[in-house]
Image (cartoon, rainbow, N blue to C red; front, top):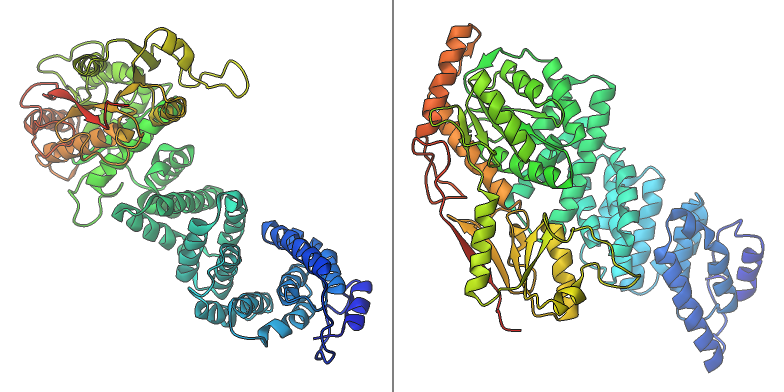
Length: 590
C-alpha cells in the first residue's frame, strides 16, 4: 500500500498512474474521534454515490474517491474505497490503474471485502479479452456476496462476462437473476444495460432463449421472477422482430411466432411478423383443421382481453403451427379494428374452417353478421345485440353483461349492501383525476355522504387495484363487486369482495382471468369440432362449403372440460349454457 505522501502525489497528477505498488511500512497514527466521524460520513456518501452511479458516473467519482484516500489514508474503510476506485478506473478504460488500486484488497484477509474485490478483478478480465476467466471467478463467488449493493454489481458483471464469453444460455440465466434482484430504483438502469448486453448475442441464441423463457413461464413461478421473465421475453422478441422485418426473414418471423411470448401475437410487432411469415409461405384456400382468430386492439381494455384470449387459445392449441403431440389444429391470427369484414374474409382465404372473435362488442356484432354471409361457424367471446339464428353459424361463448351485473347486485343485497356506486362503464371513470393535488382520485367523500356501502367495479384489474388501494387507505367500510374484466384479482385486494362465478371460474382462474378462460374454452370446443374434418387442403368451392357445414354441426355437438361453465358444450344450441352465481372473498366485517 503506498504511503500517504506518495498517494497525494498520484491524486494530484489526476491518477495518471492509477495507483502505485509498494507496502505500508509506517505505523498508523492515532485517529481523532472528530476525524473518524468525518471519515465515516464521507465514506457513506461516497458509497451511496458509487452504487447509485452508472458507468460514466463511477468514472466521474475518481477525484472524490482519491480525495478520501488522501484525507484518510489510514482509515479502515480505505480498502473499500480502493475497490470503488478500481471500478472507476475500469469504467475510464484504465485497466492497469484499476489493477494497481485493487491489489491491496485482493491480498487482504478473506471476507466480503476481498470477495467484492474479486468482482472488480473479474470486470478487468472481461474487458481485457479474458471473459471465460472472469466467468470462472464470478461463478466461484456465487452466493458469497450478501450485501444488496454488491450483489447488484456482481449480477451485472456476471451477465456481462457470460455474454462476452459466448456462454449465452448461462448469460440469459444470469441476466434474469440480475433483473429479479435489482431494486426498484435501479430497475431502469438494469434494463438499459440488459438491452445492451442482448445485442452481443447472435440470433439463434436469442431464439433459443425465447423458447426457454416461454417454457419456464408456462411452469409458473413467483411474481417477481415472472415480471422479469416477461420483460426479458418481450425485449428479446422486439429485437428479433426488428431484425426479421429489416431483412424480410420469413423463417425468423415464423420462429418468433412459435416461441415468442403470447402477448407478441396481439401486438403491432406480431401483426408485422404474421404478414411476413404468411408472405413467405404457401397459404391454402381452406385447410380443414385451422382456427381463425380475429382480435380487436381498439383500446387498453381490448388489448388486455386480446392478450388473455390468445394465451388461453395457445394453451390448448400449442402454437401457430400446432407442435407435435398437440391437437393437430393450426391457429391463424389477424388483428383488425377497422375492416372486420375484410379481416374475416382474409382468414377464410388463409384456411380457417372456424372463427373465434369478439373481444369487444362492435367486433362481435359485425363478425356475427359476416359469418352468416360467409356461412363459416364462428365462436363469439361477447354476446351480440341480436340473438343468433337457432340453426345458424354463430355460437355465443361469452356471458351477458346484464346478467353478470344483476348477479352481483343480488349478491350485494343478500349481504346487506343496498347503496352502491358504479366505477367504470356507466359510472365514475377508472381514469378519473383527483379534484386537487394529493387528494384521492375516486370520490370517496361523496360516496360516504350518499351512504354508499358497496362499489360495482366494471373496469379492468388496474382499475380494481387502484380503487381498492384508496378504499383501504381511507378505511371506508365498502365492499367491492367485480365485473368480469376485474375478476382475476378478486382474492388479492385486501377488501371484502364479490366476483361472478360460473362453473370452475374464478376459483381455478388462470392469470389472464375471464378472457383467458374463454380463450381456453373456445380452443377446446373448436379443436373437438375440427376433429370431424380431414386435415387435407381443400380448394374447390362446393367441398369448402361442405366442410364449413360439417364444422358447424360438429361445433354444436362438441364437448370438453370447460373453465367458464359446468356445461360441456353448446348441446345443440347457439349459446353456451351457463349458471351464474357470486363468490365472496374476505370478511364483510370491518
